[in-house]
Length: 207
Picture 1 (cartoon, helix red, strand yellow):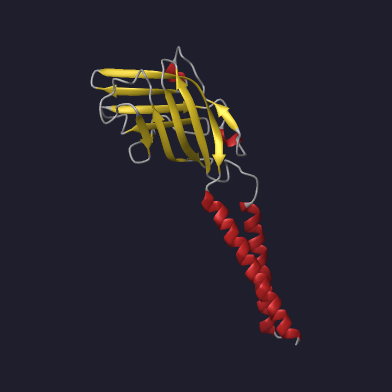
Picture 2 (cartoon, rainbow, N blue to C red):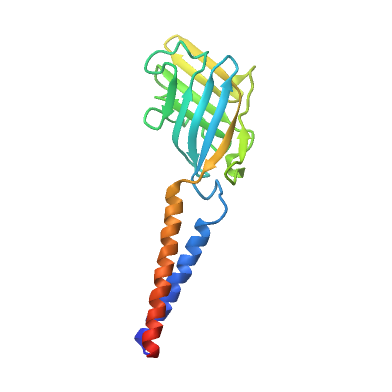
């Protein structure tokens, strides 16, 4: 076998080994610490109304939130923060005053340092990092007597602050984003092509 052929064969084996390792990591069990998981939210307010929608969490950062509130307590909120109000990544951002983590999700629209504003805070009974598979869930910490110590929503304007305690709710792992599945398929396909080329090369050398 020539040095050139030997080098090509070693390169093909190296590519396939790397591809197998990459595919294995992509196809590992769903983990909130390893991939960006989608979480569905279904909660209710103590004084009436609901909070529903979803967000994504990758074990460190939150993204793509889309959460709609119909809190009865916050009904007096004025436009553009009036009910039903939907928090999205275009009108709300992570509040940095109290850092978000696997046990807390805190967003503000548009900014708690300006009036008017609207805040949404989720406190989870179990860290989202412990939810590993589709269907796993945790509940929202509810505390009607002291809403600021648990999950709540708040509206503030000049001379007015309204706080709505979240009475309860669930946060459930919904799915792994489709792009990860597509990437895994592409990697697996690349391994197949590499194996085919190596076979053809070996056939040529034995002729």
